[in-house]
Amino acid sequence: MLLLNPGPVTLSERVRRSLLQPDLCHRESEFFALQDEIRTRLLTTYDLDPKVWTAVLMTGSGTAAVESMTAALVPAKGRLLNLENGVYGDRIAQMCSQYGIGHERVIGSWMEPLDLKAISARLAEGQFTHIAVVHHETTTGRLNDLEPLSKLCRERGLGLLVDGVSSFGAEDIDFADESLHAVAATANKCLHGVPGASFVIARRTALAQAAKRTYYLDLGRLARMQDERNTPFTPAVHAYYGLVEALREFADEGGRGARFKRYAALAEQVRAGLAALGINPVVPPEQSSVVLRSYSLPAGTPYSKLHDALKAEGFVIYAGQGDLSKTLFRISTMGAVTSADMNRLLKCFAQRV
Ligand SMILES: Cc1ncc(COP(=O)(O)O)c(C=O)c1O
Image (tube, rainbow, N blue to C red; front, top):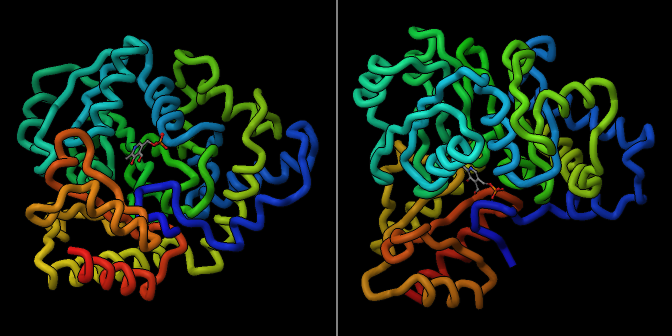
């Protein structure tokens, strides 16, 4: 079965085999070597200076990393402007409410780019310390442009917090931008690891002021203990085995630039093939990520029928979220999938639709 949902991804044999390594106690030096290698390799993914940035690992899915970042990096007296054009932006607002973090929301249409005028106006009205944004809003496949948001942050001395769960490892992120405080992400999307490990790439100066709102997900404590070759709790050791192997494979395959190119080619192949069948993208390709695209459901074909027909041929596609399930479906081209696989997928579409 090939997974074309936005994670967990289809594993390479190399990563799958890495899960069968010896049982490992997380209080032994072998575990700390594994943890250190993952943290170093995560920084290398974007050529980051370890004096400026640190990679903080945790056990949990992408939501854990986003929650850990948001709860730690907005100080007690801070105020966050949360930018939303999909499910994952909405989720950050829910986290803020749950932890009592001062915040306001700019809620945009799920079908539109973020409204920069509305964001500037809101910033001018209120006293904010941070902006949070989802880089790749997986709800629709839209890639939110970070550059103008960084500019607004720089002009006002704000920190930018990024949910990079479905973009880290493939899409460009400008870590040289001084307003960028942190990016939260996960092992089992663009990095091609298994579910269970996630991480925050945090600017050390921002981390030094981390708030203590959470217990298990306390980013400051996780960072401190990992710097001391330690860990507060029992990590998902096998997910870490998978992540380190996935990161080695990532480097062997040419790093982030190569991954971007591979995804871009696969996404374009699928787009062109579906367009020939009259199935069109919902978000213009130039506003989309290379990771995932949303397409209009063919008239008269409910999602469940399309899903089941393709599953019978060995492909798992993905529904739209909420009401969008009635109008669109999603195809992600992350993971160990090839151009030949996409040709086969397109043939199945041609026969079934
Ligand atoms: C942008 C984004 N943020 C957060 C999440 C949540 O990640 P998880 O389901 O791993 O908790 C996802 C999942 O697809 C996502 O795409």
